[in-house]
Image (cartoon, rainbow, N blue to C red; front, top):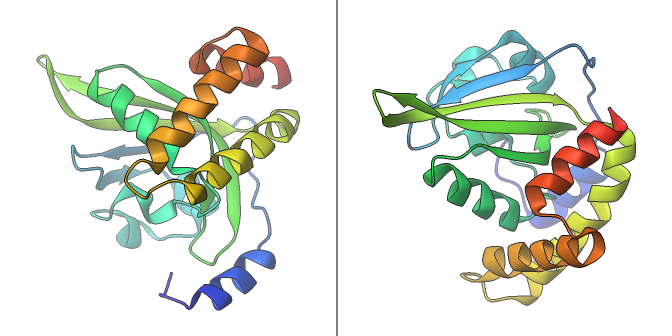
Length: 184
């Protein structure tokens, strides 16, 4: 998307519509170690409204929606760097300013014991699960706005972990996988 003033961006997102895809479709992508896209399947291109030439070589965060708390990505990269897979609900941005929700599974791509990049497989996010996760993400964004820029992702992530533990007794991963399975 072109750079816009904050006022114009707010207006664009206020008129955004949700793009959906069917429950039997998977959005698949692969990145290099720096997070630059090296593969995008046709479903990814159709849903995100980007051509392959607009995606390949670009940072995967080209589809990052501003409604997403930075703390979620902080956790994702921390998890991936420890060679574990990450699960989470993610709101993504399309090339024309619309959005789509996914349940993401991001996995390190290992070859001969070395991480060479990352695979991401995304499924349709159940509507009932989003009703649970959206207010949580809203709270995380509020924490990030009140926090110092450098500590904001960690602050919101720590709040999320504590919130989930207090409310459910579960870890973040157990919570999001359970939420997905309960409502899919």
